[in-house]
Image 1 (cartoon, rainbow, N blue to C red):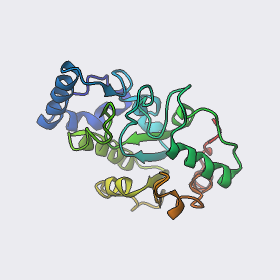
Image 2 (tube, one colour; image 1 turned 90 degrees about the vertical axis):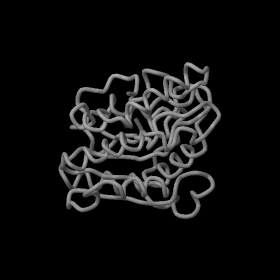
Image 3 (cartoon, helix red, strand yellow; image 1 turned 30 degrees about the horizontal axis):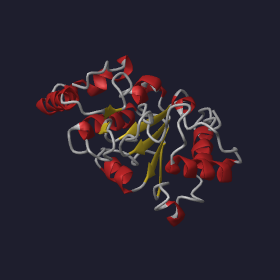
Image 4 (cartoon, helix red, strand yellow; image 1 turned 180 degrees about the horizontal axis):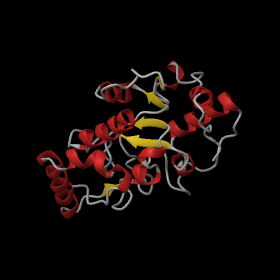
Length: 228
């Protein structure tokens, strides 16, 4: 379906949704788009990086994004993250500003958030591909069912977890997941999106990073080293 290898820890959770006509249609559509010469980001082999870097049983924080960056060399399969050597995008600049204000962590030169993912922070976009230069171009093509199933799998697995929902798209996605926010060992943090268009409407000052680490400590889990 995705032309990607499903990471082992996520296979059973995703099997039902991947074995559907809608999933096969998505895979066929993606192949046709690329066969027609359209450039799709992230490149093949990186589209499931969020799942590959953060096994299901290791997830302790979920950050939900919208869709990948659509500029050359930016997207590499983790929401809000860009590859090393790529200019830090405006939304991530604001995330770093809030991190510095919240925990005193200096702003990083790199926008690569792989270090967060390896600590159990699932950096999941709602839509996992995009056409070059066309933001949102792959929305509504079938990725929602796949990524909804990922979030549902985290909820169904149980255990302490923080869900960070920045902006209306993330909140809408969370609303489709049964049981999210209903368990005592879940913390759901919401705020406006870190985009320059909305960050001053309540994202700045929301302190998601300290709240997350306080919750993890209270539930016997190691805090995230957000400087990694």
